Length: 380
Ligand code: SAM
Ligand code: SF4
Image (tube, rainbow, N blue to C red; front, side, top):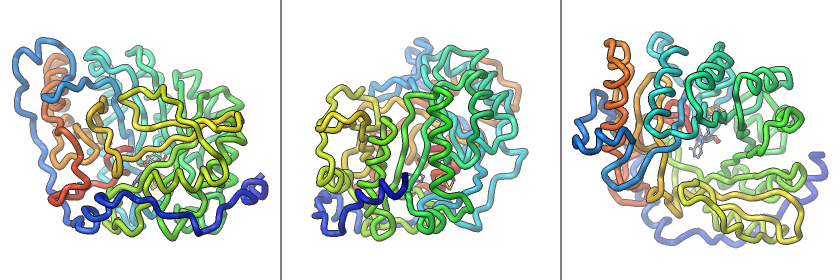
């Protein structure tokens, strides 16, 4: 299987089609950390609170809640987590009951989809109870994103029976040595492929895969990874590397644009735009021109920000509400939960926090500041 895919490897002479204005702005990106304040959000206008919907001051409505259920991970991906990362104290993490309660209240405010993330969500000892609790308390679609290292058919069967509807799996390399260097784990591409096959066998479909390409590391694998979509008839998505790594090692020279990745893939597999993407979706998707089933998605937060139609809100493992992945302010819902707030007060907190959502992440602006929290703590 891996040999078949490797046969599709592309050469290094793929032309760079990076967007020039992004290159200029990102070269000047400061790695300085921003300071995150906690606290309670200022009240949204009474007319907004009255709607019982999470809308922001730019007219966007929240439908998608991403809950990081743990900041722990068994990988240390180079673009995400440093080997010596310090995890939050256990008592600071939201409990299963607190997670389910926030999910229920968010659902009453219009949330339609909840994605469980982390860290690595499959490490959570009460994952089944979290899924079952959200299922019982809400009518949302429950999705999960995982590095697949701990997926077994038995576990997937239990989670599906509890209410898990969709899975996304991260896979950044199909080469064992490189995978080990990239994830700094003892896991292998074969383990991830086994996880993919287990999801398909258990009917956890449509299944999506995510990859982050880093120049000089794994950017020569775009076509091999795209071939996975064809092999399994699923969607393979390429996410642009974002300045959200705990080591603050991100710089524009390591960044690979979605356009460059697409050009590399199209050298082997011409693509046709699907044209049916939901405007609030993070990915722009394509089918294969030769009719082979499978899709390719490009998530381009750096070169083509999709903030204008954003419908997402994030809850960190330690109970902070982040209106944006790149927020420099986050709101301390955990203190409010633990102070005995009733459901109405929690609902107002979520409405107020949403109202503060910034218009966009501003990665390409000169005064962009990298959030002090990495993706693993925020929940991707
Ligand atoms: N551990 C799980 C996993 O890796 O799938 C879930 C959490 S992980 C933070 C969620 C997603 O964020 C993964 O697909 C990962 O590739 C992506 N991610 C992490 N750091 C990133 C970065 N600096 N830029 C772009 N994507 C990143
Ligand atoms: Fe862990 Fe996922 Fe971050 Fe990799 S990307 S270190 S698997 S949380």
